[in-house]
Image (cartoon, each protein chain N blue to C red):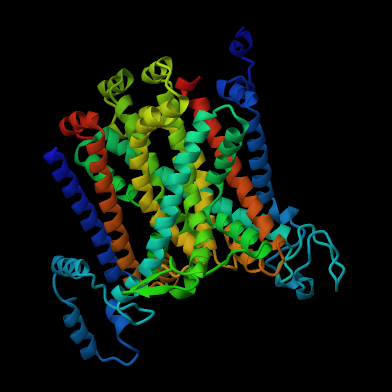
Amino acid sequence: MLAYIIRRIIQSIIVLLAVGFVAFAMFNFVGDPVDNMLGQERTQADIERLREQLGLDKPFIVQYWHFLEQAAQGNFGLSYRQGRPVADIISERLPATLELAFVSGLLALFGGIALGIFTAIRRRGISANVIMTLSLIGVSLPTFLIGVILIYVFSVELGWLPSFGRGEVVDIGGWSTGFLTVSGLKAMVLPAITLGLYQMTLIMRLVRTEMLEVLRMDYIRFARARGLREKSINFRHALKNTLVPVITITGLQLGSIIAFAIITETVFQWPGVGLLFINAVQFVDIPIMAAYLMMISVMFVGINLIVDMLYFAIDPRLRVDRSSGGH
Amino acid sequence: MTTSSNSPNTSRLSRAWNSDLAWSFRQTPVAMVSAFVVSILILGAILAPLLAPYNPFDPATLNLMNGFTPPSQPNAFTGDVFVLGTDDQGRDVLSTILYGMRISLFVGFAAVFLAMLLGVTLGLMAGYIGGWVETIIMRIADIQLTFPSILVAMLIFGIAKGVTPPEYRDQMAIWVLILAIGLSDWVQFARVVRGATLVEKNKEYVQAARLIGRSQFSIMLRHILPNVLNPVLVIATISLALAIIAEATLSFLGVGAPPTKPSLGTLIRIGQEFMFSGEWWILFFPAATLLALALSINLLGDWLRDALNPRLR
């Protein structure tokens, strides 16, 4: 068990080092950083001085180490476009993205589990079949189209909900939250549905498949034979055993929620880090791209690690397999 | 029963018609409908210069007075009728869709081809050669798999944009898109091909080929490759739908096809601006085309997976 955890941690560190290398390479090979930082009127002496200041005259490996040191402290330099420290810009934008990801994650998890149970129990019912067909269309529908359709229906035609922005936000110790105002909550609805819908269909289909599998097992048949009520069989006996894979997939989906937030944030002009990133790609703002890449990989790798360990802790059958045979 | 297929006169065509795959195709209405829709759309894209009523990229044929003409209604000023209406600059929506599909499909096919070429090559090498070659290839695959492919594509697009000089960016955008989507999608192919190669390489025909002194390269290409192609075909189909959606997403976000060469995604991006003022057709028709294309390719891929999987028969 301990050996397994250590191996996973080492793997995670290797992944982060590799991503760090990509970010470092972006800084060094995409455009000349000295060129980007000095203005039009520069002398050869200016260039030399800045090269020395930035450590660009040092050997490659020393530069890489220096970059990692700076990155670990959250220092990615100045944005080429806004001229402010990247760390400041990102920390301003982060609360918006995290709140959006949190709400749509909850929506996907609870909506997905509820619908999954429903479609599994009423397998032959009409409403369950309708839901399954809709979910197939939902999987083929690109995220940005879902957003556009929702805006058309609820903002343009019905005029119920705002189509862009976060509404009013309240600042609590540097964390701007949209949860405390009516307009903030209203602005949250459409983006959260857009972002959560795909993950919800995914979780729903997973829960349904697992549930159908479990309901076929002998112990469920025995529970029926014992005369237990249908409700208690479905929820107390069957559901428990379907949740193990659901936890893993949900955990891994958390990462993609943050990534897909880029699309949702652009559709709704939501002022989060995703919109920041896409603007950085449009204007080739390397420091922001690199910082976003590092931030998101720390999140992904961290989530993967935690999910792996959770999985390991929940399902005792894995302990024997994994620690002996690797994977 | 099999006399017809044994006779020397049987053509290739009728043998294909009698194959298991074709039989399963004829038994599945969903597959037939999807194939019909996909072929119509692909034909429309290929024949766009012949089919499109107007050339939307020739400024000489454009008349700004024709802007915002609703579908199938005569324009208030000029009296011209456009089946699917026009956009703000008076471009015929049907024509822009036909030309836009060319770009969407071209990027989709080319990106999947690139991903397939890369994935199959690396997967074969990893599976057959093994050792440190395998370790390096599969570690890179693992690392890339940690990140959603759309994010990888955005990143590659951003880097490539930074490397190309500004004056070439619009021209290069299509090729950069292909590179970005292709590189973000090779892992699926590599993993499946590696798995299948590991199974195949211990079979007797491979040992026989090795005994008669065939080179490693020839064994991989001529003996193993034909036997691992079935799953590759399935993944390629599903990847095509994903690649078309990825292209549309990137173009919609403004990091893909430029407005001078609009793909379906760019058209949706343009149409979205007019959604609020009630010109719904500029958005609706490109979006419906994209959805029809992606959904029918997906359904075709689903059918292919079931039909080629012997366990499900």
